Image 1 (cartoon, protein in one colour):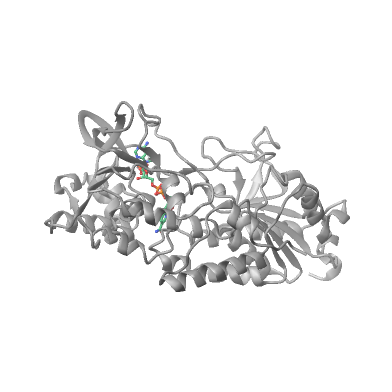
Image 2: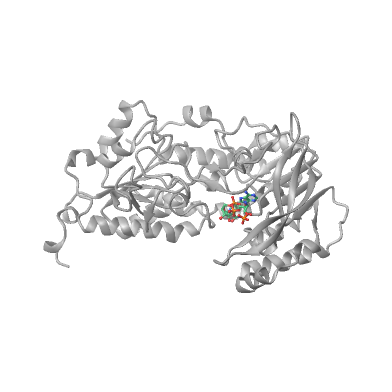
Length: 475
Ligand code: NAP
C-alpha cells in the first residue's frame, strides 16, 4: 500500500497513543504486542496498585518462583522509552473511561476478574469461611489484604473446588515453616502460618477425577510434600463410561487420573499432616453457630447431558466433614467498570476478538464501541495459565492496530493526545502516579532484602510503605 492510500491518522507524524488499564500479564502482553508491531506507538500502562505485574505478584504461589520469572519480559516493556507506567492510579477515582477515550486513540482493558464466585449456601458467611482469593492475596502481600485474619488454630480445613487455586491453597497450608521461609511469602503470613494447627486438609470436588480442573504438575506436587501424606479413596476414582471417554480424549485429564490412582495406592507414612482429595461431593451447607465447625456435603452421581457436559446430580446421600476453616475456591468473576458494557451472566466485558461491543445499555447491542478493547480474564473469563494471555492479548492488539490503520480511531481533539495532557489531568485530580523508575527502585530494595535472608525477595506490603516512601511521577 502506498502512503497516499493510508488513512490520515496512520501517516501522521503523531504516534498511536494507547492506554492499557491493568498492568498484569494480559496488559503486558498487549503492550509488548503493540511495541513490537510498530515503532510509532506509545503505551501508558495504568494500574490501581502501586506495583506492576498483577497476578504474578499477587496470585502465583510464593513457592512457584519459576513461574514468576516471566516478569523479565514485562521489565523489557517497562524499559522501553515508548512505555510509561502509572501505578497507584485508579479507574473511577483518578481517571474515567471518558477521560481515557479523550486522551488516547484507544483504551485496552486488562483488569482481570478480581472477585471470588460465591456458593450461595447456608452458612457461607460464618466465621471461618473464607474465599481462597482472600487467603491467596493475604499470603502474597496484596496491600488490600495484609490485615485479613484466618482461624489458623483449625485442625481440619476444607478447600472447596478442584482447580489450581484450590491446590495452591492446600499446598501452602500443608507446607511447614521451613519450606515457606525460603519463599517470597509476605512476612505477616509467614509468621501467622508458623502457628498453623492444620492436621487434615480436605479438597472437595463436586464432580469426578476426570472433571477436575487442575493441571498434572500441580497435582503431582501434592504427593511430594515433606510434611503431608496424600490420601485418595480408590472408590471415588471410578469413571463412568462418559468420563472415561473424556479422559481418553485429553492428555492432561488422562495424566490426572493416572496420578490420582497412584495416590490411591499410597500408604500413609506418618507425616504430621494429611492432604485428602475427595470427589463427587457437593457442599450443601456450612454448619456451626458462631463459627464454622463442619461442611455438610451431598454425594453426587455424574450424568452426561446432550451437549456432552458431565453434570453432578445429588444422590440424596449426605456426609459431614469436620472443618473449623473453609476456603471456597470455586473460581473468579469479573466486575463491571463504569461507562463500559458488561455481560452479567459470564462476568466479562462483551467483545468480539478483543473489540468491546455494546450490551444495549452502554452502546448498541453487539456493535463495536470505538477505540475500546479488552484482553485477559475480563475478555474471556478466568481460565488458562499466565502464558494463555499472550495469544489472547496479541489478538486484541491486532484488532486495535487494524482499526487504527483503517482510520477508525481518528480523534477530533488532537491536543488531548499530547503527552503532558493526561499527566496534567491526573495532577489536577490529586492522583500520585508511581512510574517504572519508582517500581524498579522498590524491586531492587525487595530483592536486596531477600538476598540478606536467603529468599527471592522480601515484599513491602502496606499501602503507606508502597505509596508514601517511593518517589517518581512520569516527568
Ligand atoms: P477453576 O480452574 O475454574 O476451578 C474451579 C473449581 O471450582 C472447579 O473444580 C469447579 O468445579 C469448582 N466449582 C465451581 N462452582 C462450584 C460449586 N458451586 N460447588 C462446588 N464446586 C464448584 O478456577 P481456579 O482454581 O480459581 O483457577 C482459575 C484459573 O487460574 C485457572 O485457569 C487455573 O488453571 C489458573 N491457575 C493456574 C495456576 C498454575 O498454573 N499453577 C495456579 C493458580 C491458578 P466444576 O468443574 O464442576 O465447575
